[in-house]
Length: 158
DNA sequence: GCCAACGTTGGC
DNA sequence: GCCAACGTTGGC
Image (cartoon, rainbow, N blue to C red; front, side, top):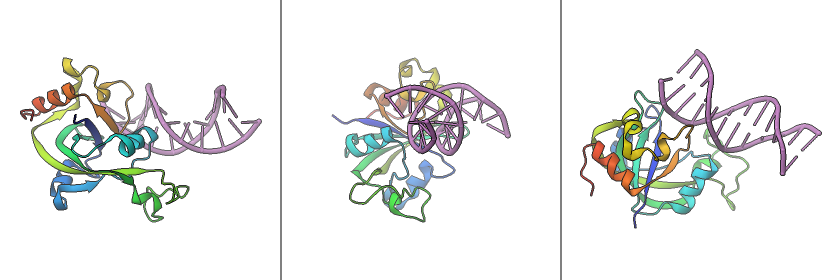
């Protein structure tokens, strides 16, 4: 059973277009510094899982594209790099605190799906993203929610 | 730019 | 272990 996820990114920093144009359309999802999100990255996200690529802090915010997990959790290299803004001096290589997965862009959404439409969709009332105060940058997505977001974005569910 | 919500830190 | 202070997220 494939699972589904939503990853947030600020498009000014790294947008779905950046991923689309990256070498191999791939990147490592680095810089996550929240334990709940870390646990998903390290323990739960599996190769082949679907990813909704969400633009946060954007005008407007919303889902821009579809990606998939192509490499499962491994230590985030930025935590050990003193020159990186995500450096964590208290994390040791023999016991890494932070993890990444690799994702690959899969499909552009014919239609960007803005947050206000997600909030208005009756089938998405329970989606984590639209819950009050939800800030988690890595969120699980239910299969029915995945299908609905793709449909709203103009894609036939695979 | 504002600020509510949330997670983390650190004194006790 | 509590909880106030602080920093961050992210919509508006």
